Image: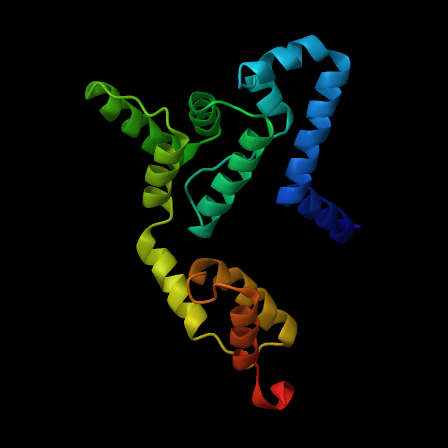
Length: 196
């Protein structure tokens, strides 16, 4: 019974990006159905409300764990903000509202420094840049790209190899610019017996 509850909790905690987007789309449809004039007004202005954003249950980010969690978080948040058609200023405000712990302390420091300098971060691209510089440094991305270039199946099953290949290929897109090169790289990493 505890395994069943554990599996259910794990499934709930691991919402995929497509589930997040599906929830956002359903929420927008519900909003339009229940109050078309309110939602239309927001879309005409090119913005969204914090209520719309929060109803989708965007993930929190605390700055701890594997660096790839930072990239996953920013991608999930960005997709929600894109679906809701938020403005750049709203994107930064809503996303930073979902930072906690170490990440929140970093953001408060960054915001304070910039305000003291008389500048304000309102560009989503700028926010993403400084966020990833802090929580997903280029040295980590380069290390993962290097692991991809040397990846071979070895003792892994084909399924394990494919999962690792897919995860690491994201960091080395310049090595595999098209599907043909990607397939070739995958085949080269397979054990010889299996490849033959």
